[in-house]
Image 1: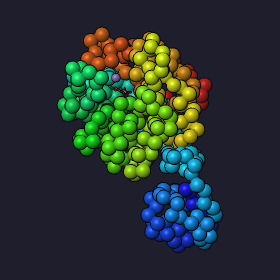
Image 2: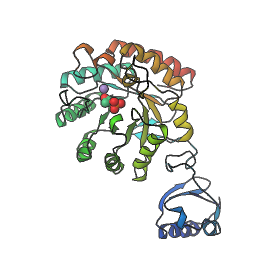
Image 3: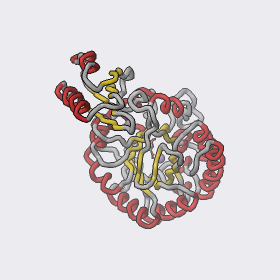
Image 4: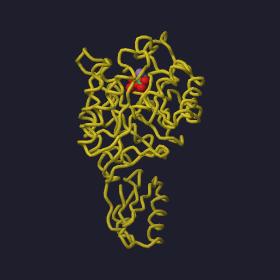
Length: 337
Ligand code: PEP
Ligand code: MN
């Protein structure tokens, strides 16, 4: 529920409400606006006499949050959240493009990609060091050596780094190197992993599971936020449908829906949705037109020799074209890249 304090509520009145709620074992999330204080209280509302809270001095009203996700919900926070990654802001007027190879393969491959995607306007370098592969015989990633290469690329280019974390036991390690942690589609409902990243001091890109409903996706975000990490960026990356031509079906309707239900920034990964590079640019354009706050794009200097996801990877030249196309749509949408 949300406790809305009067605009002129005194500090001691706010403190009294907070104490009362804490005594009832509610988890408190305080939002001190310029005009008024709003208290988000998460817990077992059956033990609460809401009328009594409403009767406390300084309280204007108590509003229940009807959705199963609370902190993630628009009811909890009406304005769009901005997630900060250093000087970058996700969910503000600027659109950010994260680009890079599916997997970090070598220092040379990564550095070459990093320099080229930066030149075209990407602000974040992506690259998996721990790869969750469908087959146990496929390349599994360079692990910590890959993380070191990502950190080196950041040093040289100034790009921020996003990389996937697949195991609760390596969250601390990955967080030492990454600017943004990525939770992959296959792990969207790995609740132990979600809990672990909820206490990491790094923003999280949370991919939608291939068969997850929007509500399940938002509940996964709630796990991260309820543990104290408010830096969640949602990522639509395609869902499984009856259509076999593409790897997945990009559910662009999820962008306005997630933004309607939630205040969190939403980005789109057309690469994993489509699985074929030639369709990536048109759907990247469409994602921005649908209101996405950013893109995640796979780029490889030589897709034909990529160890992972070559067919969907753009060459650096194709990526430069994508950026030009996307900029035009962003302009129409009143946003910058
Ligand atoms: C990836 O980003 O490389 C990846 C594995 O994506 P997803 O989790 O969306 O399949
Ligand atoms: Mn990939």
